[in-house]
Image (cartoon, rainbow, N blue to C red; front, side, top):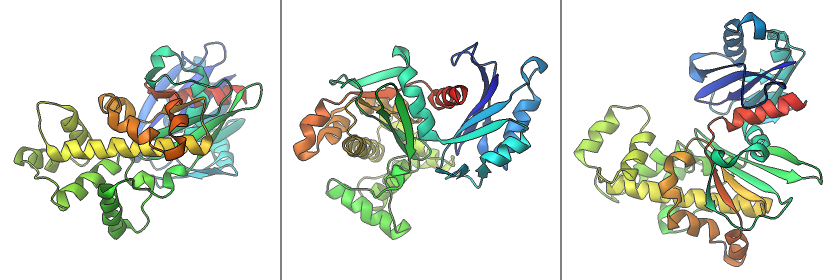
Length: 331
């Protein structure tokens, strides 16, 4: 039995072929594709499968973690114009079965098998055996998921909690909310707690006169389509001083901490909070700061509960792929 597994995101799509004999850490083949260069998941999958060696082209099933809600075997990528169905995928790819799971569900499936080198611990805490586990994943968008213990194993669930309302916690964030409401109407947590959130915060600070943008930074930002890496790297780099970038990252980290704390309370994740997605591992020094910890813990009467909650950053860039493969091989 060979499985085609995939991590399907708004920016990139990673596909790999797995077998039970080789295990999850040793795929038979793997490739990454820019999602926006293709009109569908089927097109990418067929391109990938056409490149496989004959010895590993007998794939009979597939499991894809997709960045969007999965309802009754159908899904639409939140940040791509793709519509998918399990029936259509299995027919076009000529597979016995194809399964779609929410991308946070696939990350969640990987959590019980992550090893020491896959994680960076922000707070050891006091994990409760069998306690629920929460996953917050700021990347292109904001993903939220969780796991619950049924007495024998952890079961994973995705959600679209990232599209819930942004809840400001201070006057500066209240101004940010009003600023974004004028632009977007509804302001979700994803608007301020993901890759798109960084420039939203930056432009708010700049437009309201919080600080001046230095000419060298204006030039750098004008040369790119996505300002997020420049803003983050400038804030992390002690040699390139920018009050705007520093404040942007500080607010961003505070919002991540606050949203993680909210999710931890909602799920009662005494088993731990895991930060996934592409951004947390890139901003580890900022997450080590008091800003994140204070925002995570600052929940009034529930602060003591959150101080005991373990918090880890997922360093393994293939966690979602591992989770999709694990689910697919166990189907």
